[in-house]
Image 1 (tube, rainbow, N blue to C red):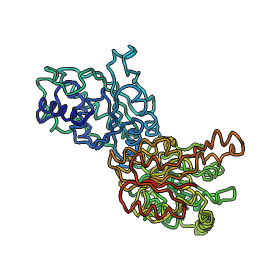
Image 2: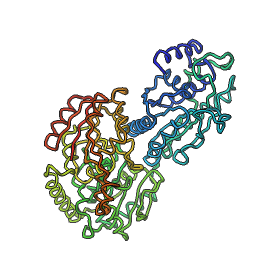
Image 3: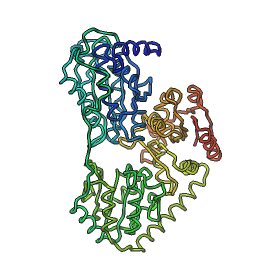
Image 4: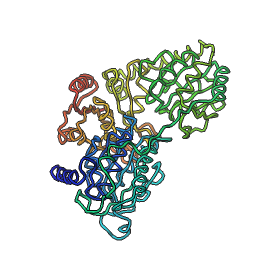
Length: 576
């Protein structure tokens, strides 16, 4: 819909509705009430993919003051919303028209499910009588996303002259949708809106109830507000933890991806120092980079964990399953070692089935209770042994990274250039593994994001640009296939005003498969797995009017410094 058409439609609606919401007809009013309730509950952003059937929703958001990001492609829109919601920790709404448009949201909704990211998916639909009728652009959108969403609502078409009860029910539905995507387990909620024509803000006499004061409705507070208690560990849980730690002077802490932020990293590293426990910090945990990093925080374990590694007496686990394959093998090998996983979300995070006790409590409160109650003596030799292995590991990594041809050295070089307080979005496949394997703990504060819920390579570029909408200046590091998969997401740079730097590590195909046994099987390996494409991406940068540099390891640092200093958009390609 062109800008003039939008303005004309909005003007017609304002004339019909006065100073309140758009009351031109039942569709604009119903959509306006829903969006108004979302705004009152705290919704700050929406990603809209243009379409006709979703016009009432688009117009409602245009009048709401909620930040709108317009995307031509639904898949890119959904991943952009995912990245923005992941970075902000706040729900982001998605709007699309009927048909396959809604299906294109699906991959991002899967990631939102497994990555626990709050999304409000608002799909427009034809009315129920047109389903299975042969009507154009009409598919079955009822429970389209199956159990990948936390809740589904098939909203009936708006009614004319609706009752006060219907108004309260509609407002409450909006509130439930907002709250359900946040709690108790963040994820996506789908509300499927059935709209009959007219879809634009065309005035229809009698659609708005005579009793409705739209200005008063808009000025009123939210119909329903929510509050959730903190999941505080009870006395029995605290006593269990204190006794377990006291009985195990040679303990080990594992911080997997997506540990809590805020005060948690400092509290956990403080407890590790008091107990003398090594803290193995996944690169996505929020524990590896920051002012809280002390002598207990280790990251080189991928280089030394094997059957000869020191054997702990107790393992305390936080967050998701770690990236490191060697750490996973060790957790499996230590089968008789008690493993306590502490999480506030009752969702299984143990693919090895070695956890012996799942403690459901807010991790920060559990660690603070340990700091207060625990008086574990430090066994210096235990931590010293792990330190020796850690230093040896980083010496080995430094030798590997000194080779200009070694791809694993790219991520440490990038992190060296990032400013304190900077943000990094890392793609799946090799980049996230190289980050975990070759970037050592440091006190520079960095925020690291990745789509590790379902760990796909699709939509990563759009996710990163969505995160950059919340954190301008973010750096996105991606492989060539992840970038290729989502190149149309580059339009968000200009359309959404994004400031970010993209670094493409181009190894000409599926380099990660070289780590697998299939790599020894030729010719199928090269043809079916490595699948070299022979592409470089300068022309993609030209298409979207992005500054572009093609560099090698020797010139990468200077190129990244220059890009970051510009505080704009940039694309840097490193060929390996």
